[in-house]
Image (cartoon, rainbow over all chains, first blue to last red):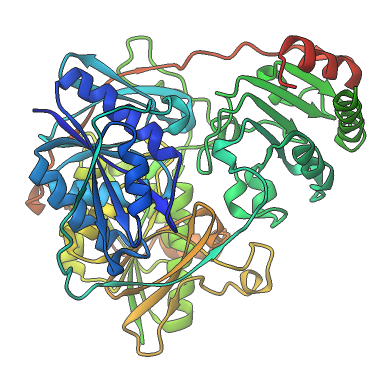
Length: 321
Length: 267
């Protein structure tokens, strides 16, 4: 009873770390319902990913087929739905990535389930699980009940730990039926390659906003000195200064690194929604009245083009000593 | 090929408004809060208008809510949409209920392209397009974006980011996903949800606002549609998230570095 099905995400045979947070969320539910955690992984040539997932002590259902090489909601949905039905899963979830947010509602619709997006934690008691999630750009925390027999959800990875390694895991082959004629076709994926760590997984994030006036060189330099990811505000992305997927905020990525450096960022609530869970926040801004300072652990009123190079020098000197 | 395009326009709290939770946790304080069209829906309306300008056809704007949602329908009509549909419903609206209602609207209108915001900025759920596509058995392209930036020439010329195929049977959509952009072809009728970088919505002109007053808006009582209106995402309690304690200023870079090294121990 109360089995949980988590859909893991992989790309080109590499497991997305966000999936491990989703498995931990699934384990938290299963601990309350007395159910078991199952993990679905779909794609082509995913044997190694499936084995890796099984090392977390879960039963992995690997759907390995040529037709699943490029993700489409229309091809993944029937596989996940059949698995959920076969396993008697009453909870179906994934991480709240672009993949999870695209797929889970479609799966839920076919299962007659309601969905909670960007879940931060669980409420209720015993097997009656409620979902805690942000609304209004994180200005409101809501406890919601899903009034359907099957409940679907996506979790915010920063709010859950990584699932611990465990024994007893196994890999099973999942059935992949011919989906028939498809309404949607994959054309291409233009990957934005970066040598820097992924924004949502980085220990340190260095972000810039309008105050950079489009010059991210010093911030990128600081990021590289620290092994950090680069982030940006919506204004910086809209202006085309950095690529789209570096946007931090309500409608971009939500990050919670150990250190978040906000340079030339005033602190609109939509941006704060994406970074206020960071452990330590540093703000560098010329305007002493910028709202970001109210949130920052360490605020420095300064021109970022002077302060950032100076900070980089100190970091480099510190490393040498 | 002329396109019949249906766009959505949800009434939401202005993103600039200060949102406060009522002391009893049953809702938010609405006094002094301004309302407007969901910003993502504005992008959907704009894209619908650009597609119509390029291919001909009709843009229908739909909203669900009380009489007050007429303001958002008129706003879309003032931007250039041709006619409106207001589905009147006074109860709670979750993505399951909204998609059930839109399912019935689509059944009646049979549009070629349905454009929705990828999420509304009140409940931030990001689900309706996906539910609607599945209910209708249609292809979905969520998080529609485009390769060109919002400062590009294509954007200045108000070209649609969604491209109709030569045979008029599908649309090509560039989707914003983690780590890059995915391009998909979706057969018509297609459901597309719009992301921030798809376009910059136009402002309504004064003649547009005047014309909008005379454009037809059909009012339909939700209860007459035969859709299940019982809420499935039930909000039990709202609260304000814990406030972050900040506000400490350092004098210079030297102090910042010392604090980060000695106190925060981040390097």
